[in-house]
Length: 267
Ligand SMILES: C[S@@+](CC[C@H](N)C(=O)[O-])C[C@H]1O[C@@H](n2cnc3c(N)ncnc32)[C@H](O)[C@@H]1O
Image (cartoon, rainbow, N blue to C red; front, side, top):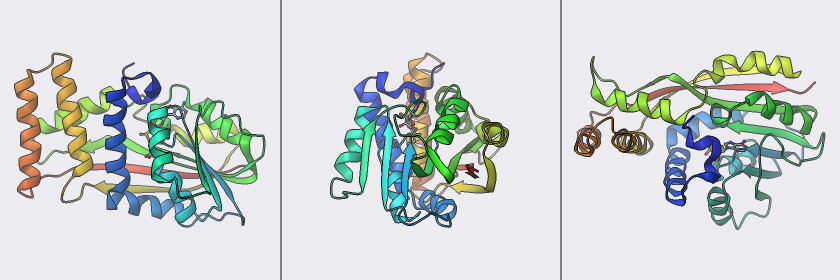
């Protein structure tokens, strides 16, 4: 398995920093923010509520548990110290926002202590997602909410015509960076088996904005990795990156992926 997100703390520092930059770019993308607002904005939480994000990355989505979902206090748990340090730096002025190094399968949180658990693009990277779901069930209070959102990776594309070579970079990137492409098509059964009641499920069509900042990080990382494993020559990787940048410069770039969010309640 090559998915670097599944054991990010063990990757070289440079790779972790590069991934953190990509996470920041995605978090700040207006279309991504709109998507998160859509499924986090209408949750019914008790007042005051304590929320935890499992797999909190650089912390922007944890912050939204307060600003969008309305929690009084939020905590992010994340195995990579590079990510945790960034999150702590970005939100050092927010006393109700904390981050710690940890594993979503064994958080150390007390039983029945959390009002909302969020997993935003976490489960696709975790071998054995059932263990993470069980941990959420354990720590949630009775009536507590689990919110899950992830990519429906088979739908990701940059194709603007048949035989578009740029699309191969996206397919390769997903092959190399996602552990379970089908997680959001399998999640309802996993949640039911863990004892959750199923709530709202929403499909979100994400289209890259004009500058395609996040999608360009996907193309750049994917083309470089193709060259690194010897699939193409470095000069071809440069040509593919240049193609993507030219499309953006000429308003010709198209990047799309569906995401699915699923709400569940601990009865
Ligand atoms: C794609 S990132 C998403 C980060 C953040 N939720 C966001 O949307 O910006 C996935 C994160 O999950 C973390 N992760 C992977 N396995 C984990 C585990 N077992 N427990 C907690 N976090 C994990 C990775 O280190 C990475 O930071």
